[in-house]
Length: 400
Picture 1 (tube, rainbow, N blue to C red):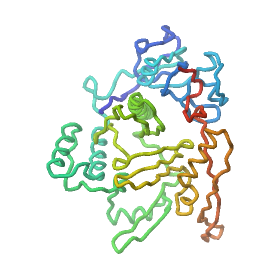
Picture 2: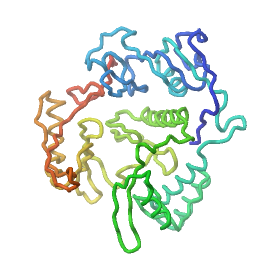
Picture 3: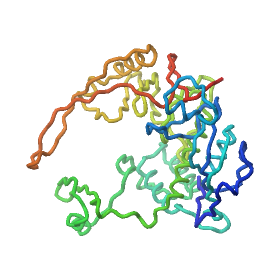
Picture 4: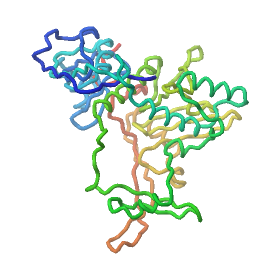
């Protein structure tokens, strides 16, 4: 999973230097870096590779820029209207060319002669990734039972990733997977009195532990001297290509997020390869069977699950709604399912699901008040065309 990233300054080429247009295959692109170009997608690609920022501000994976802008179901636009201008890494652009995208015009190229891990150049992120990966694996708990299986896991991880797991530190710890903080009392009090920080929260947990949440005041925020936008762009580009690699193996994806896929598999189909190593997929609900899946838009979906003992339960992911007890009585699996089917299958305009909630606010006198509010939930999807048979097609798709 070790990747190569651009180093140093690029050689910049403008449109006058690129004469072999249009590009229709990866071999036409001789550059390694960033290409600002006009891209024309095919009309029959699923899943879509390249994203587009529509005029409404939505980031969509579309086959027609005009359809995405106009939310138009049937595409009748010209190639000029379907295409758009954007900058891509050479990795994503070469993959796009292999999928029958066309580069109509190149405006500017940043071509990097030097790349990490190539021709004696230093590697980037190795120590950081290995350190963070070690903490993540140790905080994820043992994937196998039995001393022999655990020893084999530790040895295999070291062999494959070069990371030595400490068996004595392997323990399920969801919080530690996200953050690891070690502070001395002196450092803690230094933060408390730091004039550049705003104290967001302070909790006295027990006689030996206090917790403080702070953020840097806006006027003191500084951009890191080690910030490198080109490297950041390649990190996300490589991640998107890795996810797309998995998508290509799936016949019927239901939902895709930054690092996850929900998909349908037939009885005779081979599931995605799973593993515990960097870049490999693992099951979110390894001990349960997903019976049903309904989705009302990005980060708005619900799963009906069956445990090994036959117990049925539901798991809801609803963006912007804290799933308190009162909310779960209204945002039930059946309510979401019925609302989604009414909207996308039956073409109706179902009523919103109103969720009451309490919010603590501070008035001008710095007094804390409990304010009652209502949030309205509704299914909303503007990333493509939702058909009555509950399939989703990208904007501009013409089949087959």
